[in-house]
Image (cartoon, rainbow, N blue to C red; front, side, top):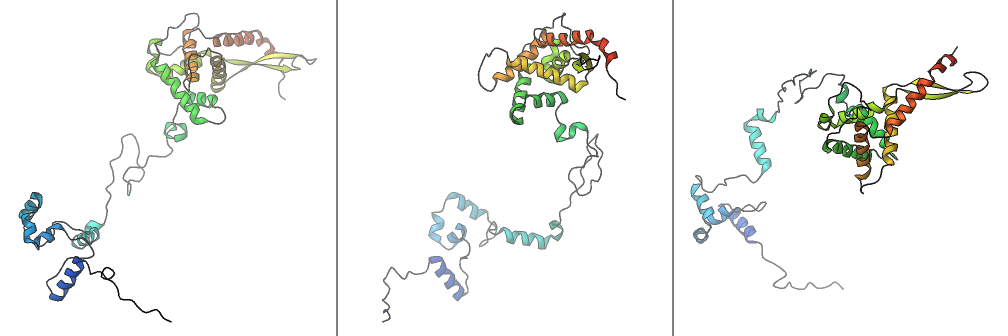
Length: 302
């Protein structure tokens, strides 16, 4: 059997909201009512309530007194409506026109039209490329310090090394261990830590390496033959010597700054002539001078 409809109680069928009732009444009488789609401003509510105007805050009273037109809002509640109105009144404002920027001095602009900033002339300079933004020796030193492919950690260590060189006291050079010429005095080195690093590495970089070549003199006897090195090979040998000597230094602290500080102290020791890397360089050069007579016995390629 179909269930009989029970009459609704007094709380089940609620009356419409005051704003809805006022809107329907205004639509019938033609006087207009509050907008239901958006909230009614306080100024419109006070306009219909004389007692509320007397008890309104002072800010609202001053706003009502300064408003020239009564019954209108002093602001727009619809951003879309404002945009449409501005577009209809000023159709030229909807078109964005970018003015070409002024060319940067020293850089040739290819085509400034349509670009806020001018395009540089190609090809880019060597130091403007993101992969070559560091100095060559800094990049090579960082790659040789890197372990297990952790480039970010090696870059952090490189930054700590340069910071240590910058904040350390100026070194005192040893006349018995002369540095390469063409660099500023050692008292100025902390002002430029990259120059400090370059001076330390290039000063202990060997000019050659010794290669044992079998059968050069006949009879299967290996001869020591000196082989000249280019700049990158020389720096690589010096950096590997330096890192090996730094790893053998006595640990003075702990944490992530321990190894970078040991490397920086080794660099300072090189400039001051106290590092054992000087002895390695001297031994290689001494052996190369003794073995230079073997260059005549080196077999030539046919």
